[in-house]
Length: 396
Image (tube, rainbow, N blue to C red; front, side):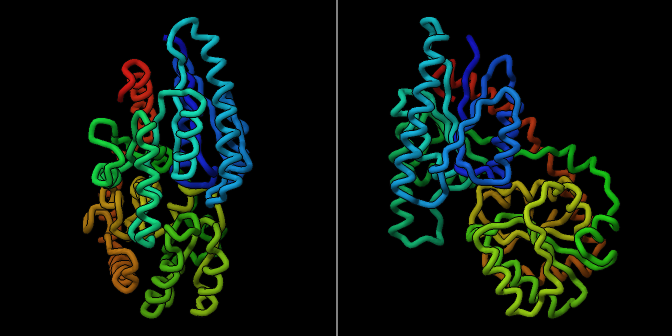
């Protein structure tokens, strides 16, 4: 068997679990067996990093955007088809009578739909789609949700196999008749555990660079500022906590479309001196060392990468109980899980852990013990095995 050309397609190279894991995969795929290609939109802080990847062919498509834009979507589809056709022609010439060595691996909802149809139109038969959370959720109007489920079901018919990052997404996909137990594999979204556990930084100095007092309790949320993550709920949680513990500081790491709304709410609640907006950061392992607690207020998820990052760092978590989050955070063991939008209840758990640092430390240590399942090198190996079996058998 010659080298397998694996084409990863993703909508936007922002700082997020799906994006960082995709970059890691194309960077570290075994070059003796695989030839990685990356297709993405032009937006996102990781674009420049992608351009520097050695041995990776990069194709950036300006029309590939997250929002539904029919004209741009059609152009993105046609551009992807053109790129994939050229790649297909290359591997056909190189295969010398053997089956073409090419697999298309899509990520995220938008690129997942357009990328798989582009592969179909280009004549590529082997496609993998990673579910990092579905395009449909319980917070959508029923007709919108039904439309997205229908779209996923139709596109599933031209998909060879699926990867789910959580058991919850795996079960939801089966229940929604998008895939079956026979064509979906569970491969956890991974993190570089060693990077988080071996980090060395001066906690006091790092806190000062963030503008936080040496001894003030520090609670953070690390995420994109988009509706899925409900960052406005984090601000509301902060307000409830501050009503009882005025010395606490809150840190929001990330950015996105909801930033103006976040800044407005902070002003309305008169807590500007207690909320720090740090923007996108690449030093998350160092920031984790400064925290007393991580909060995540998501409305839906695949399996948020920041949770095992906190676990590897020994930081307890208070998060919403959605999709794959309970597969990382064991309620009452290494953190607490509350229903989404449960502002008061979430704030009370934050207060409880801040007032009981011994319990918080114990929860953090339990997180360290439970994090090995999320090793990023394990994720990579599982993907390589899937690719090899897919090419050999046409099935996972």
